[in-house]
Image (tube, rainbow, N blue to C red; front, side):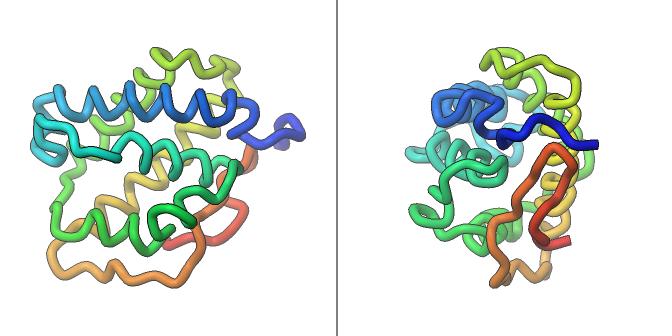
Length: 156
């Protein structure tokens, strides 16, 4: 099922929407008792920018995460050794959906379904590569998520 012709990034509202989403989500990660086990309770400079750049690129926006932060390989490496649990992964998805509401992203059901499908897929990868001894190396590009799901192969 195809959605509108514009990217998910453009449909969401572009860079401003990604920044609002990232800020709302990161705040939840720092204050939630389950997620603060992974994120801590004190914010790290640049995290909101990195998350906004990642989400923007994944959803079809500018390749800012690749250009500024090292792309797919850097994201995988950032999760190394964190030992993310399934409960933490699920809570991350829940916090993300609440952040999308707070950030006033479009509530259109097809958009929200595509966004949730990406976050479910991406958090499963983050959980897997965060386990002790997991291989976090990658020469793959940042994945591209569309209205129909994964368009460019990422790590899976």
